[in-house]
Length: 193
Image (cartoon, rainbow, N blue to C red; front, side, top):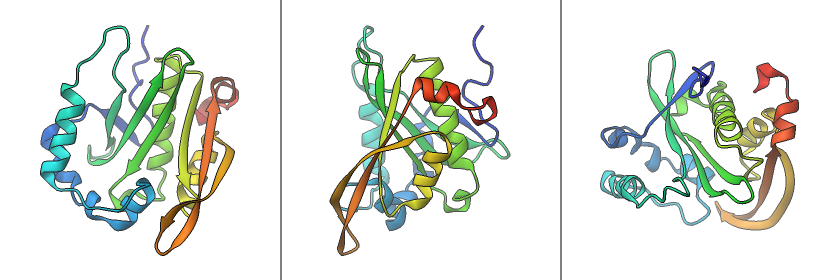
């Protein structure tokens, strides 16, 4: 029997991306700190039209029945159903059962309050229990200590560091590679999964 709470945590729930919601996210893509924590390349604001073009490409791409698309969701609060971010599983490698995690809490009112941690737990549960993944991996910039703390809290471990691999705010910064394996996730106490 499928888990009734597959897309829900203690603070957030996942919902399918809606094109009509994109205008609500444009302020995130104008926020230099938000962009600076996500983008390896140059920080550039994104217009509603650019967001809609990206959305249309992702939704309308040809899907291969033997290799499902990369899943992605909007993150909504349970308290008031407010759109606060996104969670994606990218570059799914079905042979080796691994994928890349991408998460962003765009609404600053929800930073450092446990929403990102809760969303990570929901996404990890989906990847391990529904997709059968064995490995989840991500990169994070060394200056984003808040995100690194979240990832460690949910069980990710540092695998390595690419030294001075990103130029941001006039200086070179390290890029941290992190991952979690299914047995490590399964070893966590149930309340932390």
